[in-house]
Image (cartoon, rainbow, N blue to C red; front, side, top):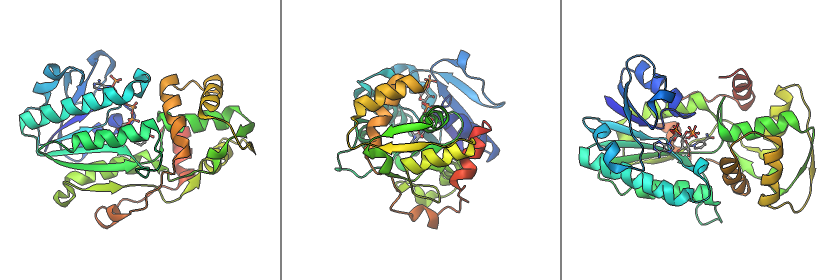
Length: 294
Ligand SMILES: NC(=O)c1ccc[n+]([C@@H]2O[C@H](COP(=O)([O-])OP(=O)(O)OC[C@H]3O[C@@H](n4cnc5c(N)ncnc54)[C@H](OP(=O)(O)O)[C@@H]3O)[C@@H](O)[C@H]2O)c1
């Protein structure tokens, strides 16, 4: 197939592009700044910002499927409005070009359960993309483990830099992290299974852990030990300031992610397992690879 990847410069997109090539697809990457993108051989690069509909229309011509791997959390507090706009432009351009399949990687979290602005926004993007004429397949994931993942970077840097942590209630929130290669295997595998067109799947790794356990086990992989001292109240705002001091993760992005720590992110529905046989990497092994830069 000829496949368009948006977000090709990102953590997931940067791994998806070579995997699609390896699976025999022709790949076109839509990037905002081609000077900052070093594509694998054979990739057709198109320049365009999804904020500018006219600049991206042509990139959708003659593609069979398109991936949406974009978010605006680095753009600041109005990211939700911006992400709705980008998704609308993507859907409009895909429809105008007659694209048949779209794949979106969004976020887990139970709707109506006081979802954080970030997780609510990921769900809004899913709804906006769902308005297109193509068949949309959505994968919903929690923290993706791998080198360069902003959410995993938060865990890794805290585990590395803070031997004793005063932690709010969110250390008890359950999360089902998944290793990035397994996510990419799902993303690629969907195209080989036409029955997944139009479906929504929850994906997760082999273990459900609390954020506290993720911190402890990540620290252990680094030869560190963290002591978690729970306190009943530590507002997301305070947690965010404190994360700013300790990590170098982009501030806007870190703040948006921290708000989401209160929401359980667990794949309750494992339908995807009946469709795609992806071997799931244990959390500790995923962390080990991420620490090696993979
Ligand atoms: N990382 C995780 O733990 C995780 C977990 C669950 C779900 N996901 C989902 O996975 C997807 C990809 O996330 P990621 O972690 O790979 O993100 P990322 O590394 O931050 O990459 C985001 C991508 O979006 C692109 N982008 C942003 N604004 C754009 C615009 N206006 N026009 C075109 N491209 C734009 C960026 O391009 P530039 O290089 O030009 O900025 C970048 O390639 C997202 O949908 C996210 O919700 C990620």
